[in-house]
Length: 273
Image 1 (cartoon, one colour):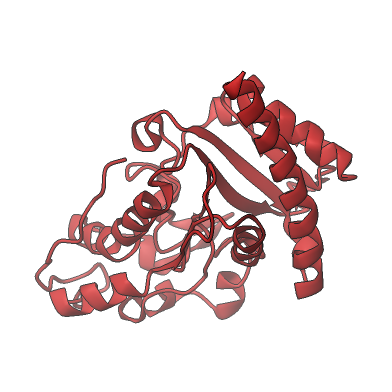
Image 2 (cartoon, rainbow, N blue to C red):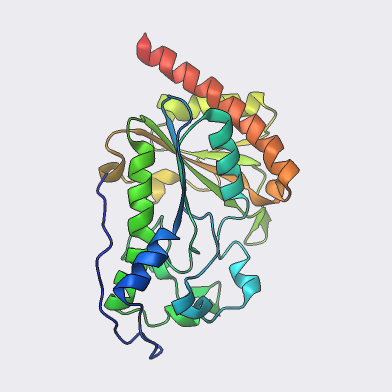
């Protein structure tokens, strides 16, 4: 995995005329941009959570958005950070959790992708993203992507499996999603199939099999082949209405954690055989 280190960026005029942060401020914001959880015991699994937070660094003034929009699924993946922490605690696995809003910089999108600094949310303009200059984008990468990449590298060191944890809305384009959880994969047989079966055994019905999104038809940044270095990689999607309370998170972390333990044991047994 390639690590992009923060670089000093001199103050420039942003799209709204506001000055971009100086190097010292960028460094401070980068330090606040990611939460790291150290491994408690050995094992194959590392956890990533790109959309864990909905904060916007102060110099960007909430991108001109109301708090309610940042607190919605547009701003982050509700429940994903708490679920990642709970899974890390159960499995003793390392984790990296992004804290800045996906609207500030989407850690799971390529820099050239429209969604990386999306200018609108289903028709609602994002004022701070309407004219993102090259200097502005470089500053955002320095305070969001670079520290997350570095933390992800530390989490992945010595680990052979990476699971990226996300949540999704229960209703999308007026259609209710029937899957309480989904596993997104590029190669189904390696680990996805055992995990789907183990989640079903935990009572999830139906389990999304490359649902609600088909990873074969999309390109994410975090789990690109060139970044994960041949590791087994999956995305986990959990409906965010299932993670509304601490008790909900604990209950689903127990079930999903048990399913991961079963699937990883199956994977290790087949690999050893």
